Length: 371
Image (cartoon, rainbow, N blue to C red; front, side, top):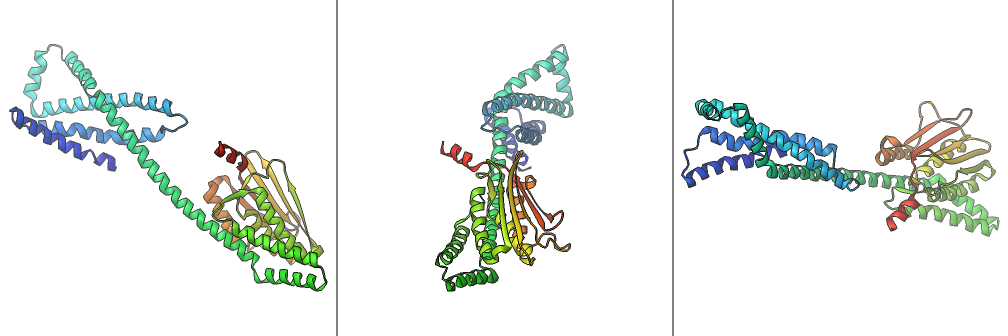
């Protein structure tokens, strides 16, 4: 770990300081034991640093529990000071045994009870290292938080870029569907027929509906989620055009539960499901077709079902349409495993597409943001 390796610098300066102090103060010549102790005491914290990182990651300091976590880390810092002082004294004792065994034996013998001497020295060293040890611990916690924050920001930027690309793809897919040569030709042909029949009101209405669909599609710039009400407005405009084309062959039913109109849904998600239901299901029927859109708040999930009585799925193509693949990718990026999109054949006829996303009310979020 980079932070652990960074302790090489203070260890080197510690050894250099020992040499300089010896020269300046006229002390005895510096021994190998002195150099190892001066630098090795810093290296002990290099071994403790991964544990500090683990503790900091396990109990991060956040705004919701700021003071509780601050005091928790202050308490843990005292324990790490004890660990640092204990390992430091053990290192000092081992260096004395290896390099100056006679001196250590004489010093201990002169103090009477060896165990008392060791205990007193250990406690004194704990209090000596306490202020600096706490400061070092808190600095390492700060480095861990800064490192984690940097990584999270980088990952968030990557996710935002991915979502922006997927949203652009979704907008292009939706616009492409609206400008599909067959769709556009049939829509313009219907407008021309109504104009020739002298149906000025119907002609103007279809032109306005086509304009509204294209405008809503283009206006959703870099918006990953929209209220369900906005998504259903787009769907209704799209269906109005398709119903004018199909005449009596297409009947749509909306069954929207209470309290879900302000729930957030991925942009174009429902529109793509409706588009696929018409293009791959109802359009292939010779008779009249029914399209049903339901939305319910189930627990902490918003469930949207698009059901048609069209031709159903072919076994080799369980989920037709580029929009379906794009929607699944966006669901994974936005919600992870908490969202799903399942497209299956109906019990008798047609296709059932079930979209589930975490429920959250965008109007409530807007109220909180304004406050």
